[in-house]
Length: 144
Ligand code: DQA
Image (cartoon, rainbow, N blue to C red; front, side, top):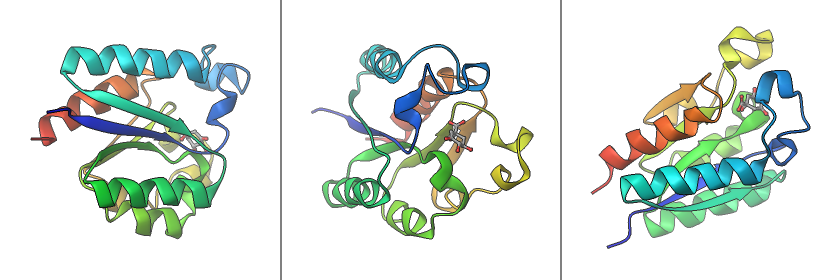
């Protein structure tokens, strides 16, 4: 049986490597996805990493995960802070873990609130790309 996890990355995360490297690091999205594949293999998981700048597309992927019973590691990026639509779609998915590369709690005041956390099993933030490793480890324990 495959233990599938969708890794969903929201807006501007396709810019990793170029975007504010002092905050998000020097490595790009492909490097993050490759690292996630390696970590997943160690945990006996299969991953399906995706990135979009489009709220509707992200919501569609969450609906797909809900319908298929697929676990999700979600970095909602800026949607974290204001998208009730992503909140509502994420509420249908279980297990779902929220991740952030940076620690939003230590940054701009608008980043201190997540509208996603209430519907996630938990949130991992502030550990760079390792946030995804920790999230995959945590989600593998929540899956059959
Ligand atoms: C982020 C934090 C968000 O506040 C920001 O809008 C992002 C990335 C992170 O991974 O640290 O785009 O989700």
